[in-house]
Image 1 (cartoon, rainbow, N blue to C red):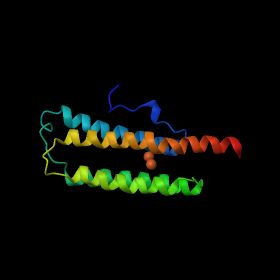
Image 2: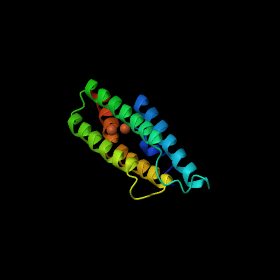
Image 3: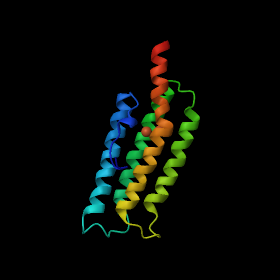
Image 4: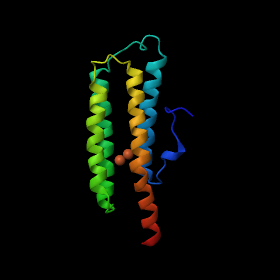
Length: 138
Ligand SMILES: [Fe+2]
Ligand SMILES: [Fe+2]
């Protein structure tokens, strides 16, 4: 199974967050694939500014949504997760805006998918676990 595919492993069991994850993954993966496969776009070696800012905005909104959820549910590791969002946004901004290395757009977007994949599996999964646990004891 390729990195650019949506995986069942990503599911947290929190519908509103899962839907956003799925949309975000599918959108960026489709874009990365299109850029890697289209002969015209294949050699496009800098992410168009509009595409980069649009994508960053969507990710930022998603992070804000998760942060509101965590606050509302009194998630104990809120601060750590919020800091990770901040770090991740800085990193993604650098990846998306880095033009100096002349990397192909499709590859840059595949790296964004990889970073999102890691964030969901390392951090967001804990929201799902917490949610399921809380439901059982309250
Ligand atoms: Fe997330
Ligand atoms: Fe998150």
